[in-house]
Amino acid sequence: MHTKTEGSFSREPVVIKTEALTRKYGKISAVDSMNLEVEEGEIFGLLGPNGAGKTTLISMLCTILKPTSGRAWVNGFDIVKEPGKVRKSIGIVFQAPSVDDLLTGRENLQMHNLLFGVPREIRKQRIQEVLSIVNLEKRADDLVNTYSGGMRRRLELARGIMHHPKILFLDEPTLGLDPQTREHIWEYISDLAVKECMTVMLTTHYMEEAESLCDRVAIIDYGKIVVLDSPSELKNQIVGDVVKLKQRTPDTEELKKLDYVRKIEEKDGMLYLSINDASKHLQDLLTHTGPIDFVEVRSGTLNDVFIHYTGREIREAEAEGGFWERMMKK
Amino acid sequence: MSEIEGIYAIWLREAKIYMREKERVISSIVSPLLWIFAFGAGVGSTIETVQGYSYQIFIYPGIVVMTVLFASLFYGVYIIWDRKLDFLKEVLVAPVSRASVFAGKVLGGATDAMIQVVFLLIIGLFISVPLTPIVIINAFLMLLLISIAMVSIGLVIGANLKSPEGFTLVINFVMWPMFFFSGALFPVSNLSGWLSVVTFINPLTYGVDAVRGIILGTHQFPIFLDVAVMLLFSLIAMGIGVLSFRRM
Image (tube, rainbow over all chains, first blue to last red; front, side):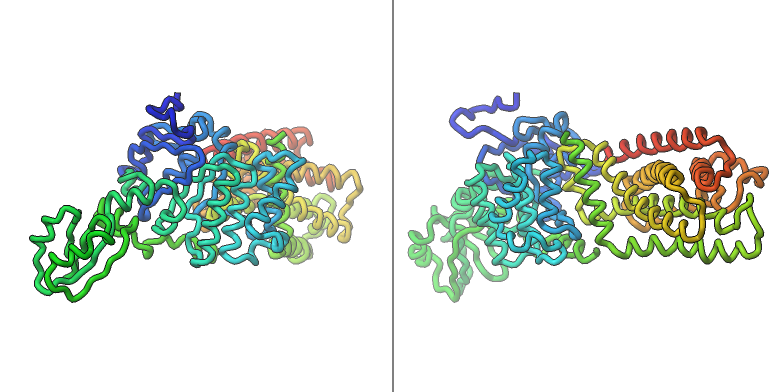
């Protein structure tokens, strides 16, 4: 029934589908009547500020949280009626670290093998396989409490893929990591998606992460999908390029008439213009602005898209502090 | 098959963690030693004999049960830490039933407690408690049954609470009354009135009675009644435990 997707004939099969999926906490809807379809082999991003409902959505799809209403299928299985089958089809890397400190990397993986019913004959080989993918072979027999944050993350990634799930969920996979480690992890994830033919659904509030990693991105805010498309489409269709400039005598009347100018905003004495294809129109634009004191051109980002739809910025400062604080508590 | 492997995986993790946290092992050995040597010998110096045994020997079975009681009940706090550190999520999303997760945890907790029992039985040999091999085996099995019941209770409380501080508070209301009204420190036969009523309601009384019967040969109730009460109590506790885990 869930495979009956309108007009899906030419597309890949849908592996995640939600229908009016809702989760309420008291009166607040953390996830509000969400409809979503993710196709096989996609890297699908959920982008939004904290409290937007990303983790709540993923928790429901992973069957650790029951929806208030609505339905969802993962790998064709109903998340409420067939949680066991859903769990067998998925791998998860949680936002907060969930590897065991007092076990070695290898012991953590062995435990996962047992819990996820990986056949006895291939257990050792699987462990070897994933350890080499995430480059942890040399440290595999050290206790996890001697690992750095990045190593833990890689170990979790290894664990998440070890039972060859059809769908991998990543909740803020690079939260709290330094930029280099983050880029490494992005590489691992995109390699994996290709090599293992996996569908990946990840949440993030890092724009660059969504841009460089995801085939499609759903921007969500207050539990609703604001817009959904590929990162490049989102940027081209909605913001194009951004020209920031300062006119000597502020006058936007003439600029508003230009057909390649999509949007004009004024902030702190600066003008922000969203225009189509800056390389083509910049020269013409400057003939209409009058004398200027300052100009800067950049391509639009997903942040601009987010601002366009919500009027707010996703700020990194909003990042949930959970990661390190929880680790320090122990 | 995979359920059994799941139980094994969880038990194995608990056992490894226990052995690696030296503080846990050491602290759990020290306090029963204090009870036997400081309390037992101290109070014993003013009491001649209880039911034909020196007080220190008389309370020995009670102290062993106490150790099992404390270790088993307190084990429930680790489920709260597991949850706080999110380690539990890995287990909760695994395709393993909650009954198996619970069973693995119960076995893990019972293993902690029974390792302490082994230490105490060795000490018993040194203070001339009459321990023969058959007594040791019987006592071990009875203590295991008590431990399974108490770990289940601890896990039920742990599964329903969010903070370790809250757990300590609640567990004290369970642990101390159970211990004091169990006949671990005095013979139940001497009690009267409300005290004896409370003691007879307390399931641990039957556990203490059985262990004392097995080790010292003096008991209040028939052994089959002791075992039946503890079995029934364990089953109820485990049933509630599985339900609590399903709601987690």
